[in-house]
Length: 163
Image (cartoon, rainbow, N blue to C red):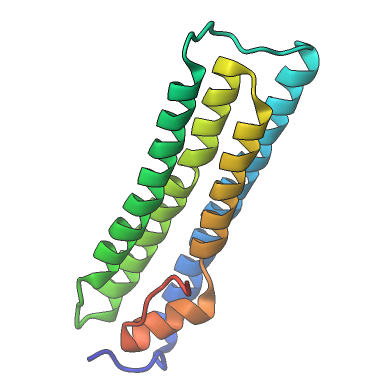
């Protein structure tokens, strides 16, 4: 079983790795903000914006995009749990796996907002974009790297997502 985090060299690596993960999480949050700005610029500059594509059965397309977003949420939970389920005796390997899980889950968390932007650009409905952007924000909040949670995971293998 893993020991405590008393080793100063490991503590420094943990601090560096966590800082990198936090920067990645902040970049994902910034990308979500940029996505919202893009949506608002398109909507304001092309008033009234009805989308760039003439989709006959938009309801089916909308359901497909929402289903894809739900699939991403489920995939994110499965992938995150799977990446952290593999137990290692070595703290270094556990730290690398924790950082990898964080990057993968933050990248997956951004997908619903991209789907919402695509749906907005196709059909012009900004409400769909904001719903899917909110889903992405919740996912980023859930999986944003928290130092205390990382330390708990490295010490006793608890989940790295507190939810």
